[in-house]
Image (cartoon, rainbow, N blue to C red):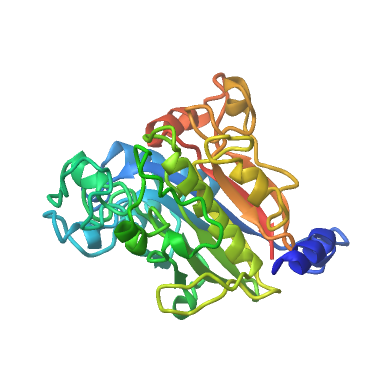
Length: 391
């Protein structure tokens, strides 16, 4: 297989390779430099909420972020207002990611907190709410009027209007904009040995015409190179579809599986992937990367065909230690990242990178320091996940 040599070499040499990236001398010993990467699903944060100050959910999310102070932060479920403005009366500029930075993150949200400057922002277009022109839900109607579920069900990715549930990345380090690669238009049928559902007996399936046009990514898959500490680390972003809201054919579960597989295959440098500019191939062999996002899949999850076990635990990512939290432990497991009882949000470096520290921001019930537990519950049903990575 194309990725065998990479998996074999990096799985063995990852720690040793990471150990040579050292910073200053403290107390007579070398201290690794690190960059804090984080991911946060902020639960359908809208244009109206972030384009002005004073929204309780946005402010709570900003307080959580200001507690952790990540250097590179992926945001899931932040509306892409550039896309939404085509059908909704909302401003197209600044982007919601920029507005969230300016109105909330750079402004101290509590007296003991300090604002964070994120000069670098990238907001890729999303497939959510982008209408397909096809009857994807097989209800006999092509609903092309934004604003209801029928429209969302016929879109490439579920969304009642373009750009809903989109994603973005903000960074304190420069984003190498000219080198960003997106795979939003990559067709599901172009993945070899995919799990694509084409059986007309199923509740949900793709016809020949739909197969020729249907996109794999429910939002987008994007590689955002970040220049940090003298090197480039590729932030790999995605937010696969939830493996629910379908029938026994498990259409969404199989799509989620293949969305996750696309990330791992890209990291492994496979040749079949083709980006939106027509460039083929995945990452080069010695690239360093960090996967960020809500994957809507947990270890051992049958609905996603155990995609996490196969593709995250299989060698392309450093999974020697998953982040934990006391709040998750109280709920049922220290590895949980969401209130609905699953581990679905990930910060996964490549095997050549080491992790100094990591956590899920979820205080225990009896530890409400400065109101942090209240903030995490107000901000989202997901929890912020972070890791200090040594590039």
